[in-house]
Amino acid sequence: MAVARDSLLTNDYVNHFAELVMLLELVIESPHLIEDIRNWTPRSYCEHIGRIGFEPADSLRQAYERLEPARRAMLDAVSGDANRLGAALRSTIADANVAPARLPGIVRIGCEGLHDHIRRLAAILANKPLAQIERNELISQSDIDALLAAA
Image (cartoon, rainbow, N blue to C red):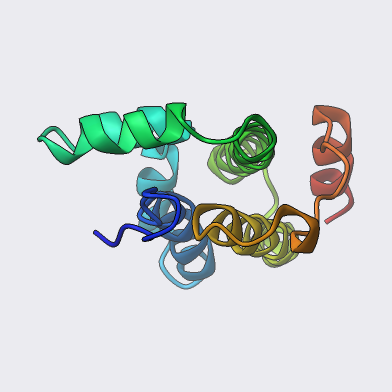
């Protein structure tokens, strides 16, 4: 697990979302992975590091708590958006009523969105200047639903 020197945060958190992207990209050719997608759960940064289960989790949590308020707010907002998108994708993909022909479009739209969030999270965790990190407006659940319905 890598820890950024400047922020003392771990970029391991982006792996939580990268795992979902990998599963989504493979599910069309390997439908048995739907069960793995069903088992993916949204997690905040602190929930994720809490699952580490050994000493570094405490120092990582303390580093999070010491973050400048603007950086912590952006981390929480971007991870919240990514978690909402991931949960919506999980529900949509796991829905037995989704037509197989819609799956590629859902996966494409979902992976594009998750890649954008992963890029932002990585920059936040690496302590890049906040002004250089693109922050889209919060994604509402109705926006997510509309995107997935259109796929």
